[in-house]
Amino acid sequence: MYVVDCHRDGNVVSDSVIDIQNIEKSYFLGDMEVPILHGIDLCVGKGEFVAIMGPSGSGKSTLMNLIGCLDRPTRGNVLLMGKDTRSISDNELAELRGFEIGFVFQNFNLISRLSAYENVLLPTYSNSKPDIDTKSRARELLGMVGLEDRMNHKPTELSGGQRQRVAIARSLINGPSLILADEPTGNLDSKTSNEVMDIFSSLHRKGCTIVMITHDPEMEKYADRVVHIRDGYIENN
Ligand code: ADP
Ligand code: MG
Image (cartoon, rainbow, N blue to C red; front, side, top):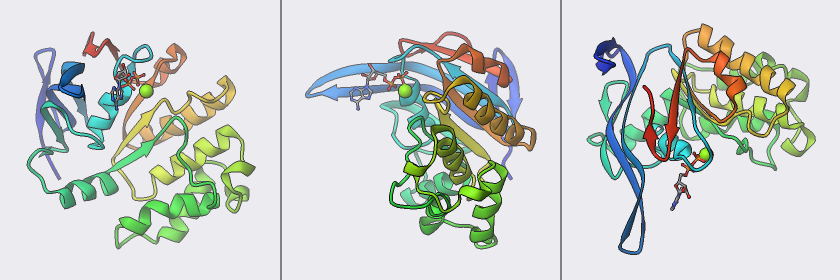
């Protein structure tokens, strides 16, 4: 267990899952530094459902990749579950990512030659908790997202909403405490979007911390809190 406090609007948030302190991210074109994120602070408490909203190009995915330690900030620090991600080893970081974080991407990122069931099992090949029966868990999760009769279908044999549901089941296979979703409904119609959001809501009710990027104001209603990002700045927090 971890107990970490962070501060928001002058108030202490205990038990923070994400604590980002003054992070900056730049890309470099040759010698030229192109700043994308300009000193962002973000604190997410355990069990919160936070939506990050902002126009295209505002830095949402860049921020999400930093939160998930898929990329490193140019300056500043990312604390995840109280761990300073600057000072932990690559192995520890890979474990943290593999066990504690479930990623869901806009374009699903499924492997086309594998079945839905095999896609869900994929993260367990590199990391899996020894106490989890991964095969039955994969079946359970596919059942939870309503795909028990589609387990052996390949992604091309599934609709967009079904593919996203496979991706959600995959993100949950290692029992993460934090779900990071980058525009999970960006490629879905509104009915399917609501179905996918119902799955996130039910995970939230079970205690998962969720950070979801969206640019659809309709999705705000699912979140406890909405953070707006524009041109690499957070407008409210
Ligand atoms: P969003 O997800 O909000 O649409 P991104 O975080 O993907 O925005 O991108 C923010 C800005 O950073 C954009 O101007 C984009 O062109 C730039 N950018 C993103 N990735 C790279 C990269 N690898 N190299 C250079 N610039 C990048
Ligand atoms: Mg993006």
